[in-house]
Image 1 (cartoon, rainbow, N blue to C red):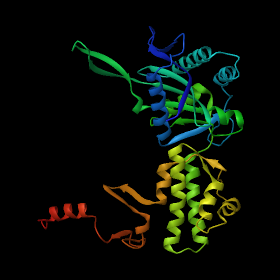
Image 2 (cartoon, rainbow, N blue to C red):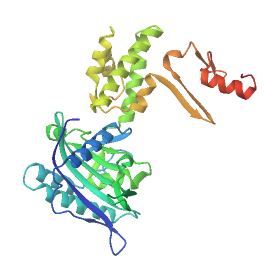
Image 3 (spheres, rainbow, N blue to C red):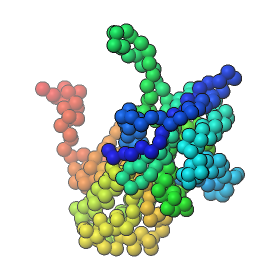
Image 4 (spheres, rainbow, N blue to C red):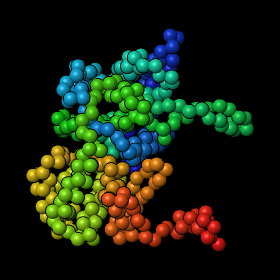
Length: 348
């Protein structure tokens, strides 16, 4: 993985005498080392592969009706801009970020602290600023003298409070709504929105909605073209394969590129079709793997039943009767068949 680290720093988030979490600042950047390369490289890999990220930008928060709700919190943006323009050093910028984080933490009853990491690095043709609150985890190690001792390590796999700013996109197109991405939390406000508030960011492009609209457009398009079953699935596969490549490389979906993929299948008018339709698709938007998987598979779980099958089997091995609300499967998978036979006493 080709990552070039410019600067990185860690600040400790600890519980103060008053019981509140506060940020203890490190006075100098982390020294360049193989360990730092491994840390930032692994964070980049894990973050890029993480599903369900949100995308946004610096701006004014909006209410549920999409109207401005309060004023923009520009303190982080101002400090970042001063660093990026060379008016302020990286350490000074990170210290300001640490102070802002401490102020935001004071509003909530967080049980544990961690380490605030800021890393400026480049990968391929983009410059990034990675910001994360990493949790320490207790472990046991053995010393060279064979003594057992306690230690701590950073729990990278459980990264929940993290954001990444594409500095290249932010500088080239300040009006973009997706140059900042963040991990969407599982516990609501205290996880995802809390981190956005600290940085003064708001959600912009809803990747899941955009991907659902793309799938709807593909289905409508293949229906309009009156393709046979195999041709329609081939078109879906072409879109899925392109999007999967974008996910792997961390790039966005470009509608013109999707249209080109379908044009290779002899379907020339997809871009115009989506432009004329009421799909609300951006020219470019992030890929959402869990949504796009529906181009290849049908799956669902409920009431103790879980079903999943390749889309190409619908109408052949798998038949749906919407009136009776039933699925009929011809050719039960061998491992499932074996379990059924054993339970019924018909197995060997």
